[in-house]
Image (cartoon, rainbow, N blue to C red; front, side, top):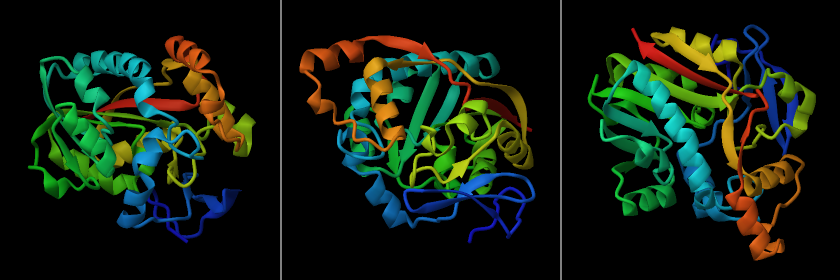
Length: 285
């Protein structure tokens, strides 16, 4: 059984079983994580084309590309916040997928992305983005070479998020900004939903943060917290229907819906906030 990456405790307590995997809770600091440490080859297989465009897949997305419109709305809102603290420069987007965030940046930025998915990297490169395929490793980048690093829906996928944050600290310039968006497993909505919470996504999500544990990891890694909140995000109705089905273990199979209905549901974009996520902006000190 894995030790807690936040406090080092080696005696976690069982918290929940889902899809044959055990989620545990640290008895010392309360951090929740999956009792599983996948190898790189397993991760490469997990984040294949099916993860992004398989309507019959239990995890991942029915069609990630269909959500480009609402994703870019959300990304532009985050960019405006980042630019309050850092006006531009070199940016690294970790877990960049097909590159929608990098495409949303203003001309003030020079962006690079990294992703373990060969499919996503190929799609990003075809769209004109600069990408590296592989797991994040600070040794791939020059020390103190970035003005900002972003991890949208990413930190929960790291085997060791604390060590990854320390690596990010090393490649940021002094005063550089780190932006993180992840799930809040201690939120009221998560506790009310229990095992059916839509962000207990197994086996993709390896860590389940609270606002406190995430901020503790950032401070332990040499950051100061600039701003943290639970943000309203824009989603298409088609995407929301898919996530509800998957949360209850049902196959969404959007092909069963008439084409005109899928198009209508994908065009309708609404703001949603279940107050079960955390977006944090932190500065290297």
